[in-house]
Length: 420
Image (cartoon, rainbow, N blue to C red; front, side, top):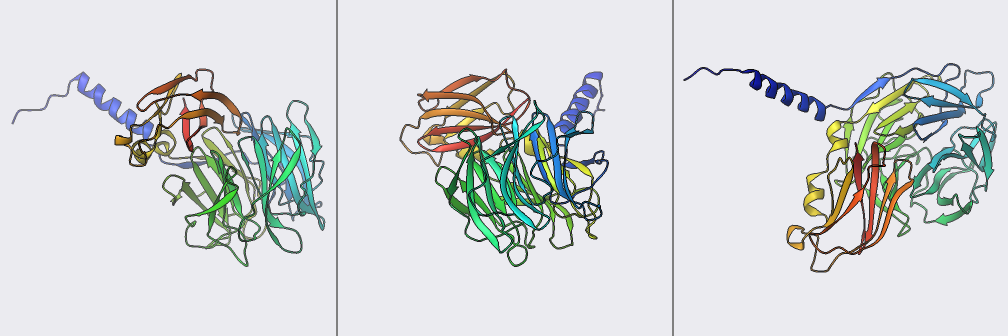
């Protein structure tokens, strides 16, 4: 057998293989960031606008004034905080929060023995909070909030006399609320997030913790039960989403409290345990997402001491940057490439190559692209496409990050898109 000779070219190829392997196979991990100076807090509120995160209000049982009304802007680029205008709704905890366009919204909550249903919008340009139309439903705390396609949603919570199951949709253009179909079982202290054009609610307090997960579709105005989260009942955790994946972290589960993290794959309808959050377990933290990373802030430890820690979560690179093979093989619609940089192609698959397809001609009447804040950044109507044909979209003006492509045709489909 001859000797193997390693030339400079061999070494270069091997080096590139290791480089690409490390680039595309990074495991998920947490990074501890600078804590907020001053009060820690539990059951606060959080949202993101642009490339900044915002955290505030909540409770610190160790403070002279336990109910907090301060709010802070977090800049991940320099890992620092800047105090912004206090929340006009007063010191409350258990409020719901979401982002619509360039404004952050906070609604409901309780403080000093009172429960609320008010709604406030924060404008970063003016550093002012503006009061909006109050939620028509019951006052509540420990509610769940999420945003879908430019609308905000508030659901469940506790009114002071019992848990709730109603769902309300907020339209920022009309500044009005619409009652939607409530979830089957009343609860409080649940977790919520949105993916594409659907909202999700999981776990919560129902005479103790629960493990169920539900998907809300605003088009059909209906809830569908999904796979359970773990096997251990849980409440008082926090939810967030990155691309096509939802996450639930911490809360009261098998331990009191926990620091575990669970990831929901929408396409597979499965939950997978991921890396635990750094540090001790905590209940009632808050979270926001910026691009391909999430940030979990605050909460309370086992002694109910309020925490001021900020933790950054980076998901597994293969999760963020890949399209599941089942999606390529099974779906009527496809997008390519993904991740994409300047151009994106969307097409229809031949029925011979798709088990879900039939002999009809599918159409793409509307193609919309939403950014991670739920803002529409592209819309194209009346696309007439035959099998194995495609439309091409210029995405050179889109910033790097996570997007959702929503295709409305014979049926509505949503797909994740990563722009590099």
